[in-house]
Image 1 (cartoon, rainbow over the protein chains, first blue to last red):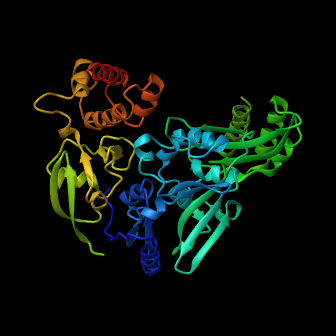
Image 2 (cartoon, rainbow over the protein chains, first blue to last red):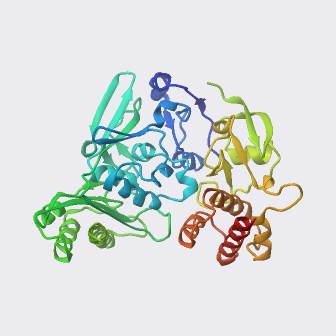
Image 3 (cartoon, chains in turn green, blue):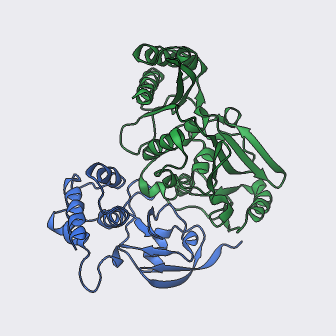
Length: 285
Length: 159
């Protein structure tokens, strides 16, 4: 239950961090941000990185600000920052609803938004938010900068498009128009536990019918994603029970649920249907 | 880059200069190097909350941080709660309301509760329950812990 030895690096600037990471990445060097997933994995010796590059002293990574039509979330922005509305309109209220489902407060004071995205646990709340809202992920390395669309970023269980020498320096979420309806629902067995299924939805109502629907599902498949079949079932429909049931049905039929010791695919498909319907009801409420 | 590092931790206002391996977690250094064994380690992977301390005003799991990361920062542990020979109102309330049985989880609950009440002295019942759900107790069934924290909040507001 004690982490194995590693060489510890504490860069003070992003340039220094990128240089150190470029050097140690080929020797199993990893980034340490909030550490709320990496440190327990090291305690169990599931992870034994030879080098840790601790970015907690890189002040420039702490930015949380609206820039144009995006909310910019720097690599050191902790989960707890989202308890207060971090963005105007529905985006801020969605984020402050979701954050209350991430572990517990003493974890949220350390864990970071970008760290969750880099870790890419299928049960991560921020990952499904990023997928549902088409976030852009900004990766930096000494080789340059890349902007990666969420749809191209999540590759599987704890697998992303990031290269080992890249730091996820920012996540950028599009601001949502003020009339956007947003909803979230998560199912787990105990408060603060990993999600067994969760859904993030957003849509607008134009002339009485649903427009621009987004339906994201997480904790169900190996990676979070938008489910186009559910979105098609919503578009042009009157918001309400009938449309929501159809969308949840379409989602349940379209997914490929992961299984674990407690949860088989049949049960997880039912959970996915239920959380989708409830997230849509939450949005409509 | 080196394996052993010189760091300074300020714990309950007292400066501790020490040398440690980077791999050692904060809880172990607080207990073994600083001799402050009030901070307990239960699960050692962030689930139980027994090791909760207050770092620069915020509650953290001291099993999920390396001690080197706390270099130069202010830490408060259960040993710092009582002042001038009098127990903190939370400690008194835990005694009066039987908020502990075996006592193993108590330091973590006290530090969690202290940080909650410092952040929001008027915290409502739902938010308090939500916040206290972050720590585990295997004896009390929680009811008396919640009762004790509510009573402490009331007595702290009254002072």
